[in-house]
Length: 152
Image (cartoon, rainbow, N blue to C red; front, side, top):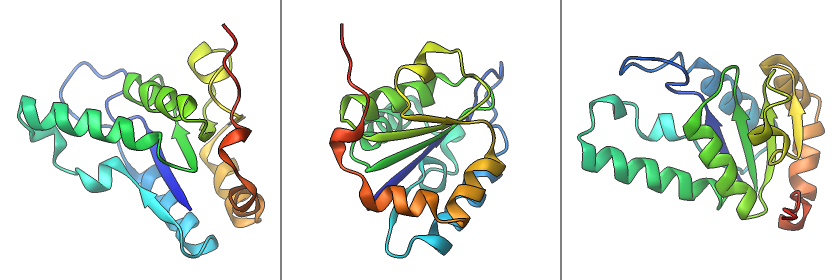
């Protein structure tokens, strides 16, 4: 099983810095402890120096990671604030019928409401559901047909 950890990196910043990424460590640790044999894709772990990439390397990384979001069985999107990159990863995952859990207070934001299969209020709720077995059980039952459908 493949899990993609999406989430805010620059979010609403107006500079070239990155927000605290400790949430990724906490999510990855909980997943590895409670779901043996999973594969986690974490764009930050794969590209910790990305703010120093030149334009070509940054573009390649952005497009590659966005595409990878659609290859996962589960995408966990951490959005305490809006993130355009995470929204694009969610869209790619949605298009691929990947199950999406959004961890966010942004329950009325259309990009969240209409792509996520479920919305959790905060990181502690997600970690609790990983530790109590709900997310591991969900992951083992997932098929790509569980994603919400797009009716236009």
